[in-house]
Length: 204
Length: 129
Image: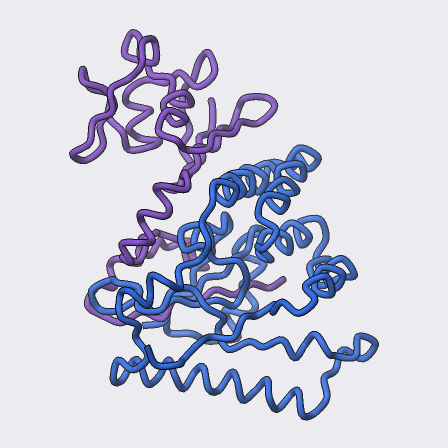
């Protein structure tokens, strides 16, 4: 079973066109508060978690087949080289193949110890960041923009690794801002660090 | 009316003097029940410091901080965020049981993750931004 979660603080109408285009028979849910990101410690989209029949996480949050090739794109034309495009598509296919293999045979499920080692970071600052984010989204929905943005800014300050918090806050200011110049500055500031850490399928 | 935001969703309560609420409102908002021995949830009862509960009303903000959880309020005091502290969040994940949630689909119909027990679930996030 696939459960697709839209992390959309602007609400369901903002996600509708993509969900309808997907003609999905699986669950497509709307998460205006980013509650799933909070519960699971997710920091970006797309990320996924594999959950077995008993409700146990057998792969904690990881990148869903996206890659960092976009960082080398030509920003004027917003295009990637054919090689990068091909590598990006190959990574996506490889991830989906891994998911399909798990669904059929249980392949790639991690034993408990290995799964625990891959759990996301959890700190008091991150816990406070999620609280500020949630209150900020609520205040935004009430039209209390200045107060909201103080909380959303504090959330990103406390949890700078969360692209979800920063990009959602930018999107609430203006649609498109989440991938504007401010976004690219943050991406460049990563240096050698990945934007999408590749999923690790080495055997454990 | 005052809005309380939690992991469980939003609740509207009748609060006074900060976030002093009735036992019924407290239970509805956060799932903890006021009893003579303290505030109770499942098998756990937490004794309350002097003054935290009086006349059948409990200072929910003070209680939430007492549990080690983050508490925030709006400038006007009409909205309170009762967050989840790092220890609770870490303990939930270390157990590896997938944290449960209920969220609506496009039509507003709620769906609960744990109702899919018995099937493998591929949980994936995305966004338009």
